[in-house]
Length: 300
Image (cartoon, rainbow, N blue to C red; front, side, top):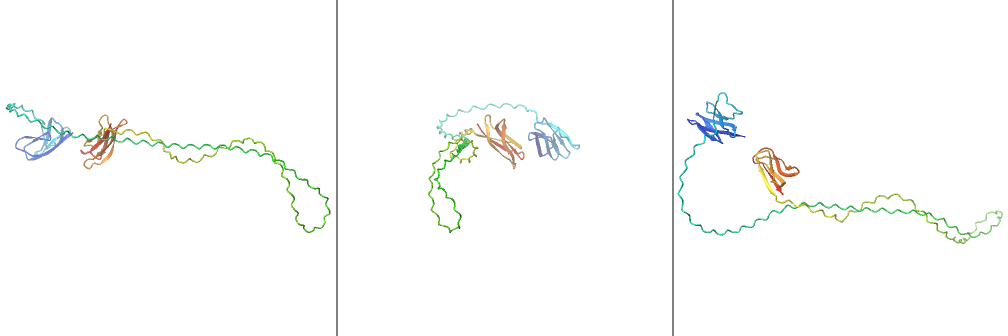
């Protein structure tokens, strides 16, 4: 990294050495001049180019040189150490001061504030709803037994003998309807037939409709893990477009953020991961600025 020097000064009638920003500048007889250059941070010697009009500029000999109308001059960046001054006389011993009075007992300090409460543990997951029990399969319908044979019909009363048919006479007028004959006796009930063999197994019935939603809540989820403790905030500011801040050893990052300096916007903000553990926070800004700041929240 180089120091950038820029200064204006009035020359005197003799050579004078000026110290500006930690680097010696040689003023040469003339009018008003200026010096500007980039030199190493800790040079052993300073090199400059001088023009007749009084203009003097310091150069980096590793990458710059004097022009044809300039004269190259150089001098040591640091002068020799001066001789050590004489040791001063020892002062007279002062009179002993009077014993001071005992001070008043100090008031007991106030009790320290309670530590921050640990973050609450995450809520346990809701237990799964128990599945509805399946409907039992319907029982098979037994086959219908065969119909027993019909019982014998009761005997019909004997019909009287029919007389021989006479010759057909002319058709006479229709006579009145005769009386209805008496109903014959009901025949005896036949014996019940034997039970038929069991029929073949029927096809499986269709799947029953889904059962209604259960109104009984599922079992409670397991308790959530304990919240984090010992939270601290660590910050880091750097004149860079990418700034990173790390948690102290033994802590992990649980959150973080960033703030851009001098109109610098934040392009990205994310945790820094080592292995599988977040150990810090990183932010990317729209440009370098000394006000670019990143912070991380660390916990045990």
